[in-house]
Image 1 (cartoon, rainbow, N blue to C red):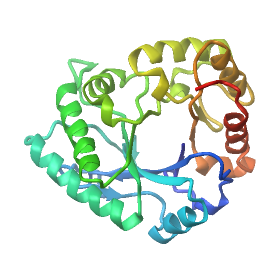
Image 2: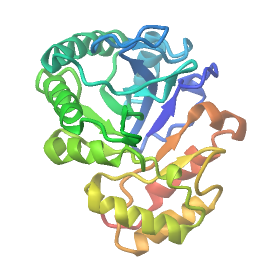
Image 3: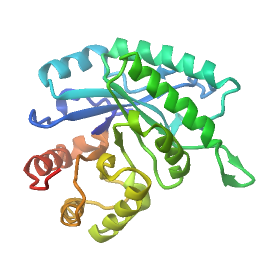
Image 4: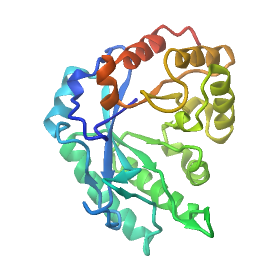
Length: 276
């Protein structure tokens, strides 16, 4: 899985190396239920990913590589300088209805296969981050269920990190059957070596099913860097964890390195001797 189009870099799908022998999911960043000024829109989502990722380009890459799926990631960290937050809607069922209608339109326009949930900030209460996780879980869980039940999407993922584990655990605990993968942002835990990565993966596997939990890497960013990431993947395998995939953030940054981590991750997964 690879995030793409979230940073303003005019990246294209066709520049990313794709091995046809592996499932490859592009995650477009981001579809946001906010106006261009960042004001909440009560579940009405609009696409804000880079303009080079057109509906025609999605259709073209999927035609060229039948193993490719494309997802819209919901929210992300910010829209311009405006930090985005989950807000509890006054009428959760209306939010779900609006979200379903708007996302159905985006999915059909862009020929997408699914959604990724990446709300990263929740309103603080008394100086602490204490979201109404029940409302978040209900709105997002029912939205995913509705999109799947109506065959609008076939895949759904969630993208928690260390400060948002609580609401995502609530969501996952109640709706795990409709969530296919957990794109946990391990780089936010800032571990720098394979042993630390294993310890963090072991912890997160107690919060989310290990079989759906994907190791992740941030190109030129936080956390474990360079080939130490692949040392960590090998250590996960030796420690009894099936490495069922990899999430990379992001294609926007990888172009400068000729997509080294995409190439090596796919080769690792295809050549892995771990029995899944």
